[in-house]
Image: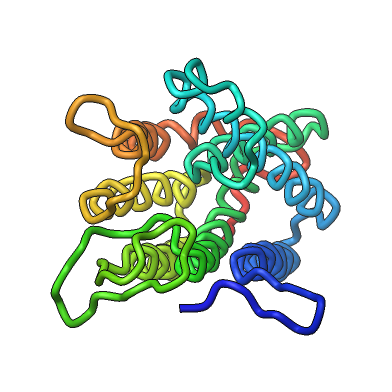
Length: 259
């Protein structure tokens, strides 16, 4: 398993390459779908940049929250940026930043929320490939044929076969993207594509957590991510039924389809 590509004095980290590829793919997908449906391209660009900033802050802030006991013991964790990025924090931070941006631009948030979530899931798939190359977010030990072995990872145990949870998560993210695109093509009510993302991702993440073996914090018998997953599923169900009433008004008509 390789993590870096070395070309002379230049080292290219595959994790960063996959993250960048995911962002670019998400942007292109959203711009293409948005243009076909008459969405404001400037708003899409604004949401993109706000989501990146909010997402990066969110990944770090949630990590700090989860690691409060350890930070109290060792405050140096606060400025150790090699580790400490929580995906759920990125999702929450990106959504909040995008919502605030739409509010400042007096745009209805829900139609854009629907528009971007399939692309977000697609980007997450690329991100999980990045995790695979780096060896983070690794799975439990296994003797099964599908187990993978790391040899030079700074995160995963080296020399033992592990469940490829990163690839399982990536496949799940791409499947969710495909399902959301199909669902959007059916012209559901505003907000329901985003709601479907929360439900599908929450269920998938909850299940994959049972296969992972990296430290992610815990609340009782559940990992922190599983607890958040339960909240995401509940939130998605509530949003599914409430979103049409909460869609609001703006320059984008509430009834506009994102199919």
